[in-house]
Length: 425
Image 1 (cartoon, rainbow, N blue to C red):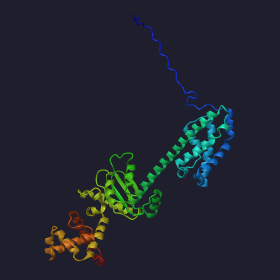
Image 2 (image 1 turned 45 degrees about the vertical axis):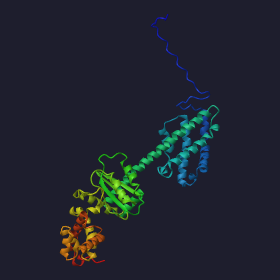
Image 3 (image 1 turned 90 degrees about the horizontal axis):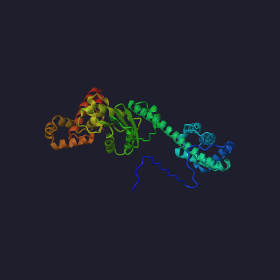
Image 4 (image 1 turned 180 degrees about the vertical axis):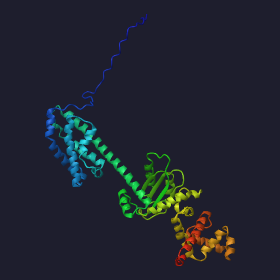
């Protein structure tokens, strides 16, 4: 028969004993205590270890031998300081922050610019190997294992400290580069003197020698932290150099060496915020980019007068709107690039264009007005397109040509008699 249940407490199950690999030592996060004899030998061998380490650096690292004397001395000082600090650390292990300040505090800031992080880690590896090879002579039989483990722990702390030093230096350089880039963009917008601007251009590492264009528009309402990096990544596919400026709600891109303007402007306009995006005319150098920037901002202000404007739109395509908003640069451009070539071409082109525009774009009415055949009107209008680059048969371009005629007549009337009629080419 089954036994009745009792209220006696059931004994707790015995814990299963842990199994360990034979001969293996359990990992301990604490540094084994250092013996006085080992510490005395370490202190007495600091000079010899430093000399051996420097010799190994010259023999094993070719780039170390090619450094300037001051850079080589600075690195050698870091290596010697690291060995000396190891003795103190071995006696009283400390935090990584202590290691960073004690070892790298003597290194100049410029060292991180001439020595990459990869090379710094190579130097640490050589120093650790030089010390590790001497562990047998530095420690007694019982302390050899603990000293070797201490070398490895210390090398880890120094490696992390080096990475932290380079990360801080990179952040500092990035913040300074951002401020310097903003100064260059601001100088371009204000049209500063060429001497001051050239020095800043050299500092930001600008390399493009031509095809400079400024593109402006609104910035996104809530840009992400990686917004500027995304712009640089996108612009690097089309331009050799890029400067990015964000001034309040405005986003400014200074692009140099653009390979495919059509694709570049369309792709980059997608990164702007809502509203029109305008790009200025191409300039020969970054010093002259202020002209492109001024035209782009003038076009951005006048773009609202053309609701059907494409996005992006060229500042020169907004000449009529810019003239009506009081832009003198657009007025001069219309006179120089449309009215003057049209008058210089002769053959009745300006008269034919004026009649064609005033008579409602009618070829027959223009022919009757000028007492010529309709084919002659067609030929002259094609010549107008060849001379100016604007087609009078297209409504928008006819509007630009009509504005140019009005502006040109006003400019010519305001000039002295000897300057009213442009010289024929």
